[in-house]
Image (tube, rainbow, N blue to C red; front, side, top):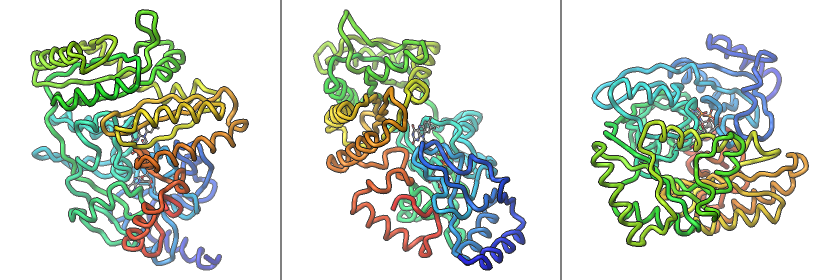
Length: 453
Ligand SMILES: Cc1cc2nc3c(=O)[nH]c(=O)nc-3n(C[C@H](O)[C@H](O)[C@H](O)COP(=O)(O)OP(=O)(O)OC[C@H]3O[C@@H](n4cnc5c(N)ncnc54)[C@H](O)[C@@H]3O)c2cc1C
């Protein structure tokens, strides 16, 4: 765009009277997210506080062909909210109002944080189950990435809790997202098809009681077989997490708080399965735990032991240790990066072995945990050398892992999405499919350019 056209745009933007930040006043936070990639700053940041303001901004940007990158809390791990091609960052953090609750439906603006959605549900005696790892993420960001988390095995992902949503299209028109085709296109489209401004969320009744079981195993294969046995036996576990012992051990060393087993009877445990069982009350949970122990006695679960966490202190300790994996990798390793992907559960063991091998060949070590039945894998690759020293080999590991996921019919988007971090690894069919949607929703290509495709 020429200088005159840009001046014209900025003066029209000022006329809209939106909260706008330009030049040196733009904080560094708007130039990156939690993905350890580059630094890209926008020409201006607009902080909208209503659907109407978003619509006005989009109309103007569409008219001038100005790029708009939507930003929630910027906790994304794939660079999704980073303005890699410049233009405007549209920040929705000020759209943080809870609009109401009625009969199991919570209405919120999209900048409300996940932790507030959960608290608001609880205040109304209800439960919002999706639990992607970052509580300060916005619900709009969760919807735009269809965020999951450990409870997805029983409760599903964010998409499963959105009854309808208000969206603003690239040309500034406002729609209610209820038609199924639009719904499945926009939710999970990482801000590249539309801006989500308000959501009606389904909340449910919380189960009466729960307990956590830990099953240590000698082989990953046995842990995954056990996960399948527990799910197939209709216990409907709320969480089925595979914790690789290398990760458990590394994290325990960083936090100084060993919680998950590393050794049993002098032998190294290879992995632990962390399973949450829910029920109507404590008796119901106890009955289910006894039935699961029965499966182990019959040999359907080939574990070394079963450890029970049924007090609130124990459960909190398990969750605290689990929640510290990510931060431990970041603070404990000289350089570390994460590859987050989904693979079918039947090939998860193959993916684990591949990740460990390819990491080692390139001078790294792989530390893994996985949401077993929903296929989500968090593969942390770490080294005791610096990021600069390992840059080339890190790229070799990254591309080998994404190629393997495509070969195994997995999904490289995983939970974190494609953003700009994974664009070059997207499979050709996936790219073609998304391009068709992009042309339909955003013909001028102004929304979140440089992402997904
Ligand atoms: C420690 C840690 C743990 C994490 N664990 C998980 C996990 O377990 N599971 C998981 O899924 N994610 C996880 N994440 C990633 C991140 O929290 C999620 O992707 C989250 O959904 C992003 O929300 P956000 O508000 O920060 O969005 P941002 O990072 O600001 O944006 C993410 C993407 O969504 C788009 N977007 C944001 N808001 C809107 C909107 N209203 N309308 C349209 N597009 C929008 C952006 O353009 C961008 O493409 C984790 C992150 C951290 C830092």
